[in-house]
Length: 604
Image 1 (cartoon, rainbow, N blue to C red):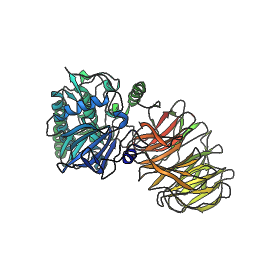
Image 2: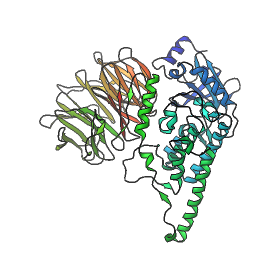
Image 3: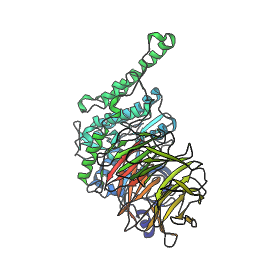
Image 4: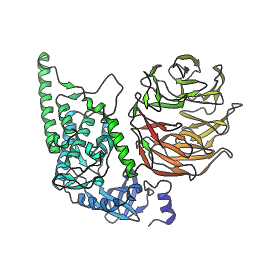
């Protein structure tokens, strides 16, 4: 039994996700380690004490559990799913409410999920992808035969142990009658949701067939469905698979395959033909030249419509805490850096070597991106100019914000990375550990080099009368005076400090390794209170008038810290894959999604 203090610590700061401490016991299960986090909650490796049995224990997000009617539906559907016996369905041992928390105990599958497999190995060989997903198709067809539709089929919910695949997480599962789903609700994951699902209509097995088609595409290409790729080398699909996927994801449910197994059978048939063509190609190249085709164009368009519809529907249900998330804007592959100023949002793409100018009202990139050379890094705006760090040449590039004409280059040496503007000066951090360089913006001359800290990587923020520098290496921050350009003492802030911002009179630091945000009082030069737990891998951070915005790279979301209470408010806001840089503009918040090569606009 947890003490009252432990229970408070468990629920503090973020009402959206319950977090028992490692080694504690919850509902008869000893928490051994963290396995994963997601929109539905947190999954732990645990031990069922009474039986000494290892399990995967999910603790459902409090934000979901507190919704009207959710608890009853969740427990009812989880218990129904527990009755489903199939060799490719993760067995559910226990599903109940304990101390106000919803928990589900499942068989522990070693090996990780398909998303991690793809991240680790890249696109899967067609034969392997079809074999693994064929097992999932069997599981789905069994669920459908039992009157259950999963509604959240995605790589994260497909566990892979060796060459065995398991379908997990029936937390969104729902019963259906006569092929029609239950009461309308919008749940699931954007990239894999069927049109009828994100419209809030009744769903049936066809929605799972749609999602499985999306997963097949992702397994074969390594790319999340609908993600825009700014690359000359597009992925390829085996001959015939394009038509299989296009039918599986047809807008009208009646046009899709009748069962998941039927879709996989069609894919297997195409794969057999591809292997035969490969053999012919080996023997006589002239007789068979079409073996691989480019991916279907539907995978690179149409996401904006889906996202807008989802956002509108979610806002109608009050699920996003009063914020609006617009369709993503493609700017080039990550890593991306952002800055706001001179009426625009500016984004650099290191692999593409470009600077893109985004019109915040039109929500589009203005003109063609300015090509500056591969590897460009940080970007800042000030004195009517855009300043971009170029680590390959050891320069800072000055660009006229109105005409986008390159005005010149300032040689700073080393490998300039993060960059900030403040006090009529440009501040540049060296990625090689040579410290900070201060440049007078007016004349473009270097004022001082080698300012502490001499470490890397560094992140910069201006405010409270100084330039604030976070150092992941030392676990601390320093203040550089904007006037006399002197560096103050190091202030310990936590494990892996990354993003840094100033707001409400305090300095806020995102600590990636401790999954928290630290608050520093500049007047005393020390951290205040305990870190604010935000989960995920927090990195990008910026302060608005009332809220600090924090990007969680591993969860694809942004969370908000209320400046008055210093607590996380609302639930996670889904934005894109691997969100990094965050900047607050006059009317919106902008987030760089490194995994998607896009920028997302959030309207508070």
